[in-house]
Length: 90
Image (cartoon, rainbow, N blue to C red; front, side, top):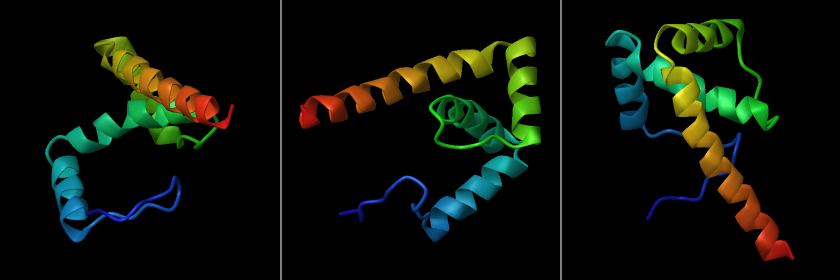
């Protein structure tokens, strides 16, 4: 069973780090997949995007819209997490 992780304090296994780097080498695919996630998290005030991440998000939105559409799905999931947490408190 995996150990519970918390936002901002999570860790990656050696294999996860390896596959992320390999994914970044392959046309930056892993990095570009991460950008819409960080955009969604930044809109919730959980992280700040770097200048490069902001640039690539705009490029993704302009060229193929994939950045925006990926962000929409992620924000929907985040809104459900937040609502579930509020429902448990109340």
